[in-house]
Image (tube, helix red, strand yellow):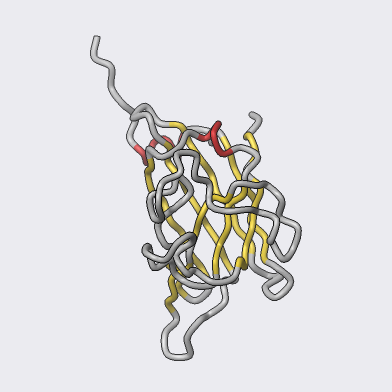
Length: 162
C-alpha cells in the first residue's frame, strides 16, 4: 500500500494545529491582533499559518508594508515585549539561519495573511516561546535580529488541546 503524504491545504482545512499563539499589540498598537497556528506535517517539518490585522501603515505613499516576524526564546509577552529574549536559535547559527527566523509578513492596509513551511523546528520545540511581529522588515543580514525594529506584536505559543 502506498504511503501518501497530506498536502498543505488539506492540513489547514481538515487538521487541528499542534500549537497556536494569540497575537496582541503593544501599548502603542493596542488594536493589533492576530493568530499563528503551527501544524506538524508528514514531510517532517512545520506548516505555519499567520493572520494579523490592524498593523500600522508604515508609509504615506503605499498601503503595503513588510514586517519582521520571528520566534523568540521566551514566552513572556508583558509589554513592551522586552522579556521575549533573542531569536530562538538552538543550533547557535548566524542570522538569518536561526530556527526562529521566518519570512517577512506582508501587510496590506493593515492586514496580513501568510502560510509557509519550515524544517527548522517542530511545533513541540516552540511551545512556551513567543512569536513576535516587528515594526520593520528583517534585512536578513544584520546580527542578531535583522534590524527589524521595535516589537509591536507578541503571542505566547501554546499547545493546542482538542
